[in-house]
Image 1 (cartoon, rainbow, N blue to C red):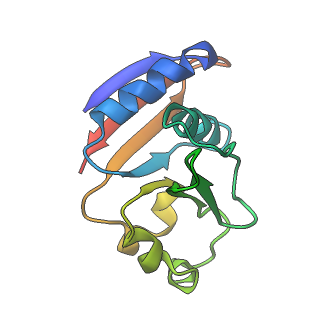
Image 2 (cartoon, rainbow, N blue to C red; image 1 turned 90 degrees about the vertical axis):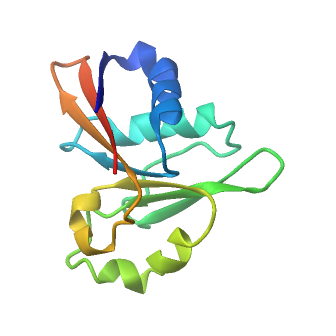
Image 3 (cartoon, rainbow, N blue to C red; image 1 turned 45 degrees about the vertical axis):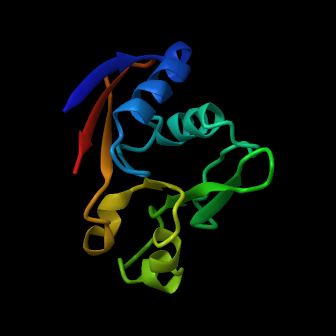
Length: 139
């Protein structure tokens, strides 16, 4: 496990660290509400040179991001609003996961049975108003 303290001014370096440490393109983000999961995913999409500005897909459940030239960069899921994990299958989760692209998942603990075997888990802990602690684990 790799750990790091960071603040909002260190998002670029933190995104680089995650991308270098990840052994999978499926990144699962764990943390309480307001921990900064979406903010960190925005930094990752930017670091990957995504054309789109990342934002929370809370109401739509999934957002799609592209590279500048239009090719698919990946998908961003927010499973917070799911009442049952099988709702993820209704969204076509298996089809999304079958593609060779980045997958960013917020609230993956809501779909434990459907998480890919190979994934990188990122735990974000709030230390204080501006500081977070990041734990990166490759599964």
